Length: 329
Image (cartoon, rainbow, N blue to C red):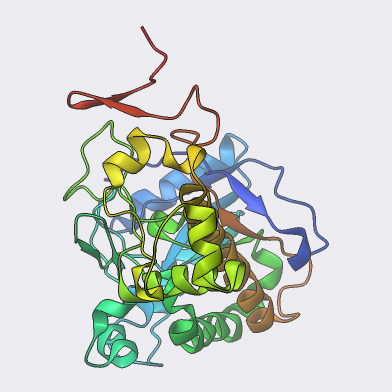
């Protein structure tokens, strides 16, 4: 029987989506996937007895719509939500557009719908994936630079959820929204295939769409290559030469993100792309849910802070095979 952890991860609730206040009562996270239903019901009763008021569960995209486009199977979540509600608890579903598996604590393997890659990517599904500085591509989520391509699919899933569960609106305490790997608003920079703790994590800006977006950002800011050259102290011959760092280790080791305008511009764009994606997903959810869940707060999951980039004291630098505080003695 899986162990049940009565810990509800941090949610940042977005006031623009609801006039309701953020969750203040104790909530717990259910197993990633329930197999022992008898044991699950016992744990729900125990949670209720110690004062837990709501249970959060992932609603895996790949589990609901994994077989084909617009073929939704909600039977598992009908059973999960019924067990939670029957135990006298509220439900907090997480609309999980990321895969389960490959992250710390993952106990099951549920990929995002496999048909998405060819449906949205055509002959070049790599345009939907993050590509790291090491050349690795991630299948964990659809990359944020494909938001326009994936918009209709996100909208269909959220709308289908709304239509299926709106009759349980009074039993839903909140709705959480997946915005990236592990459901968090971040990049897949800590993939176990190429990341070794404690490292800085790898930049994920090397797919064609990402590089095109960076060029568009620079073009919008400077307008001409001459102005780029003046700001960056470069001699660019073509816009195609505007690229992410070719030496990411050097970029961080030299603190280019603090010391030169190119580094500051890249960092502004890279971080801003995440903010833009978060706003995109929030706006999309607002559109899809409409007024089906009145008073129910909607949240996104913010990752823990591993390192801070801007304060020089905390910026990591490399010493041998470890990443350490450069001011640590």
